[in-house]
Length: 169
Image (cartoon, rainbow, N blue to C red; front, side, top):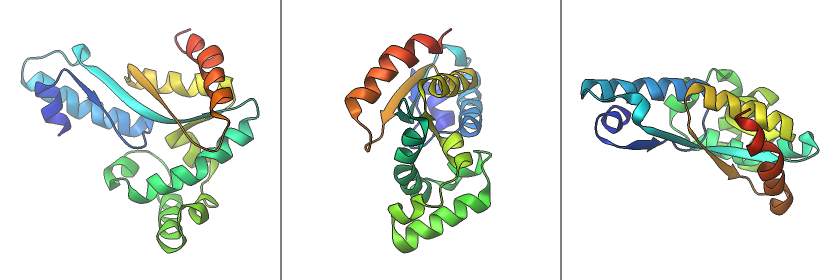
């Protein structure tokens, strides 16, 4: 599908949970399709929804992504996690726990490494650094997929005032 999108579409929105590793893999396939049709891959709009939680207290933001991340790790296609660079054993443990006991139980096994691989979660400064990683990997449309569990208004205000203006700097 990614090769076909590169060949024929004006852009691609990658889905579910994204890691920089998977983004690089996906963009390679998109470029393959574009180049196969004599198109410039750089002319395509590439976007991705990024699981995001931003708070003045980084630990609060990181805790907020654990259950949604456990859920997505359980249900996302293998290629997304296989290309992520994250510890396969940690992913397997989360998946098994979610299958047996649900996302809240799986959240207890979500490590900092998994959060930093698949989410943008922490203080505004941490979020700026993470968004820059995704932009550096080739994502031009950084879509904030704000997770429940935090005060949405406060979190989105932090994103708007302290994160977005600093991502391009």
